[in-house]
Image 1 (cartoon, one colour):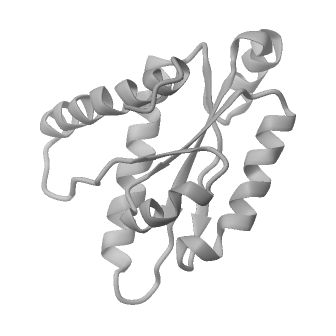
Image 2: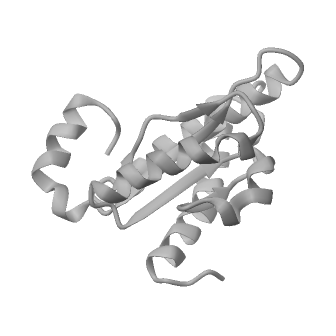
Image 3: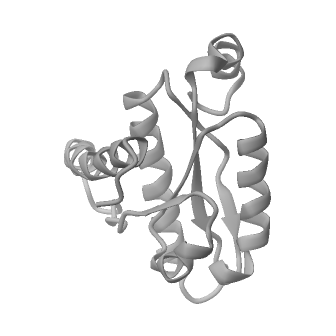
Length: 153
């Protein structure tokens, strides 16, 4: 389910089946690195849409957690989002990011961090972009299913 009124109406009636919240982590950079940050954001947003299609009846894709500083300076705010999701009844909270800086602090995260390196879409046609996303989605699905099964392989 996506964060829109149509899906939230369904979410409210099917709440007992939706146990997973996904929080896309999107960097905001307005100086050096702006293009890379935009690329990562575009990739994570598109990947989130593809993920939602696969797990529509089990996941809620929350609005992106946007941040301007180093990830470690955002842990407290992200923990607040996570605690809010847990208090709302979500058993699983996944953070989805293309920013490799989150990997160094993943042990501090209260949810499950999934890092998928971004792929630049700037010069790709739609068909190639779709193929690339499907391949990346396979990796993401494996990681989520492993977490649901209690494995950390």
